[in-house]
Length: 383
Image (cartoon, rainbow, N blue to C red; front, side, top):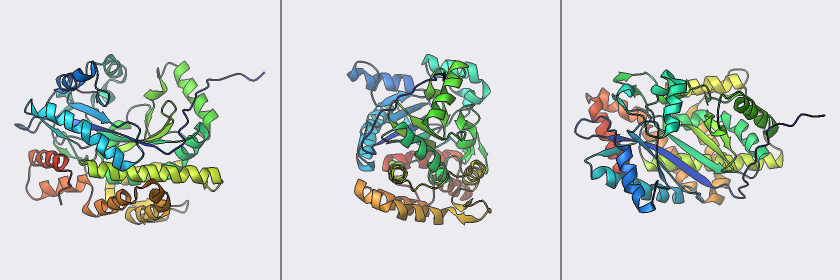
């Protein structure tokens, strides 16, 4: 008799919907440092809703907040949704003489100076994870794209690991950490992967194996919910999505929705190829791992491994090829403009380069913070 294992339902999404989550730092403009003000800001904007705000939430530390969209048809709708909530959070911050900033890390704030949010699950996380959790003074952006089934989600989950470095490079905004130039384009990605269920996922071939994996962790009490698995990419059964989680928080909504356009088009295109039976074999785990490192270290200058023979291509050339391959799907989704904007933003340079230009020109870390605040407020990357 075959032993039964955990059955995980997957919410069907007929269309490749898009949802975005963006984490933000709260800044005291008098010092450029972080302000532990999330509790009062979220209480104020939640009051009209009779409780928590439906689209603004706590993160690990009280110096950060997360804003989220509803279920959107595409990046334009997602941007409008984010703008509305961002405006509410910014207004509440302004009333306290505070500002908001979006970036993977704050250049000089120290994690040991931050207060943990009041949610008991965050205190439980710190108690269990200890030092790796106490270091998580980081902000990211997550992209959910709707899919029809768990099997479809696993096919997308495996194939999209090939493209994770492109998303990491496009969003890379964490060159500095606690007054130190890390030498990386994205230090946030290296900090977060220290958690036991974060970073690159293991190789999981199908939905049945995913269910067995999750059952093992749940029965072993390593996790209390499958939402505590924080891989760079993961299926989200309740939402019926694949969630891309590898991105640093981009400084502007323009950048955020451009990356979202690529995420949606690429997931939708991959799902179509799965249904047609034309997907290639998933990428080698060791190539994915090495390319993730190359992206975090070298950013736009990375040359990524493209085959088992070790041949490499510039990341820019790979991005341009991918954009052209998914363009028909983006046209159907109405997101070609945002997809083209991603190529233009790549030419301007991701945030890690823009931050370093300020310091290389004689600016301070405080000047970096001022620039990041301005970028979010103006929705314009500084060149």
